[in-house]
Length: 127
Image 1 (tube, rainbow, N blue to C red):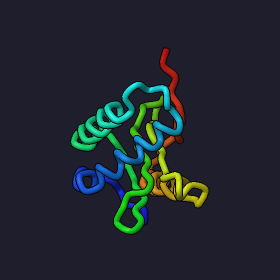
Image 2 (cartoon, rainbow, N blue to C red):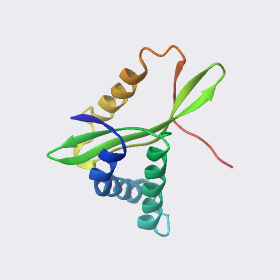
Image 3 (tube, rainbow, N blue to C red):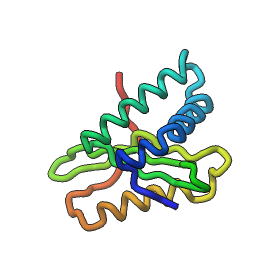
Image 4 (cartoon, one colour):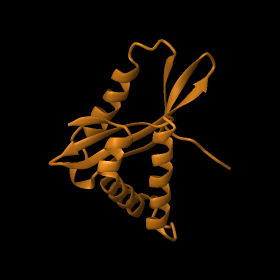
């Protein structure tokens, strides 16, 4: 089941989200010195962004556990906005089952009637 993540939902599933972040970092970014600490910082940041209503997040819940989530935020672009994808994570045991697509569909549905919505920004390079 896809659900929108607000602060109340976040508080319920924050440990699941943390576990997904940690799993993702170990798979994709194993060079980080302290992955757990880095992911705990991300959880703290997400909490603040949800309080400030700057994060737009959806989760995939299965058997009362969050098994995937999409963390995004708006970026102004010309006369409209794009959605920047900060994190898209699906539990390794459930990948390739269309859950990521379902999460993106939730964002599409959220903004389908907003003519200012231009599209997605999937990566960001910092130097």
